[in-house]
Amino acid sequence: METLDPRVRVVWFLGALASALAVGVAVFVADRLALDLGVRVDLLVFVALAVLGGIVALLRYRVWRFEVQEDALYLERGVLTRVTSVVPFVRVQHVDTQRGPVERLVGLSSVVVYTAGSRGADVTVPGLAPERADAIQQRLRALAIESEPEDAV
Image 1 (cartoon, helix red, strand yellow):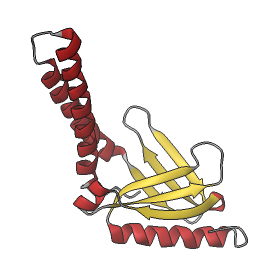
Image 2 (tube, helix red, strand yellow):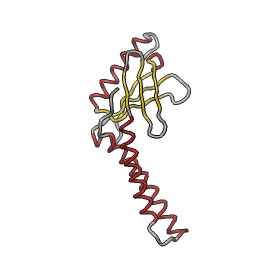
Image 3 (cartoon, one colour):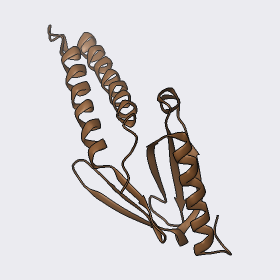
Image 4 (cartoon, helix red, strand yellow):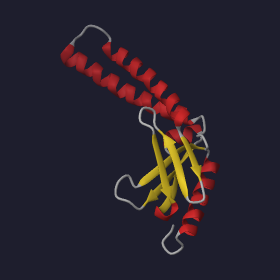
């Protein structure tokens, strides 16, 4: 199975850092308005969440795998709860590539596979070089068309 581009750890860590900052600011405001603990709890919360986010980003990278086979897209991921997903090509509706601002900053892209289904009907493969994401998108599209020529992408 393929691994993600190592730069995805930066994307995930920056997301965790933004969350840690938001929580730290909320704790700061709560402390100043109501709690008045006299200790820099906000700074402690920010640092703890930032460190935890960095650890989770590293662990998440170590377990994230995917593989495009002839019949389906296979994914393995999850730090605490391991999730294995199989997306049969007969269920694929369409495939997109997307690049958010942080992904563009570090030169990455994601492939989003939309499927027919009622719950969680899309699957994202993050942390891909843009050229690799485009190649995967084209391959998934071709395999989906092969599997169901009348209804596929």
